[in-house]
Length: 151
Image (tube, rainbow, N blue to C red; front, side, top):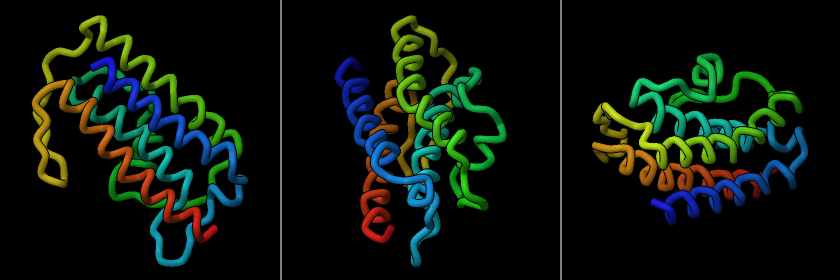
């Protein structure tokens, strides 16, 4: 799993560049033909990782119910986020993965609830959830690469 966490951290470093290289206005802009924006995708990536790894074990997440409700699957931006919210989202990019790796190495994941994703992939263990998360992040990183062409 060490390489899985290394890949996830690399993914997060790619995502962090969006936060560093785009203005608050650009992060919030929903281009014509799109349902969401850069910051929604970034926050969604964080929320889904927490749901896949922690929620499916019944463990406390690093994100609260309000953030889950705002960025879970099926949502879209309802209002612009503030710089304070961007800073909070940015702080979670790496700390969420660091905590996951620490908890994983400590054997903190038991009683996984099997889950089938909307794409039809069934996760049966924490290893499956952590590995599937890389695929999920790549899908949204691709969306972000498309969005940036229109902002």
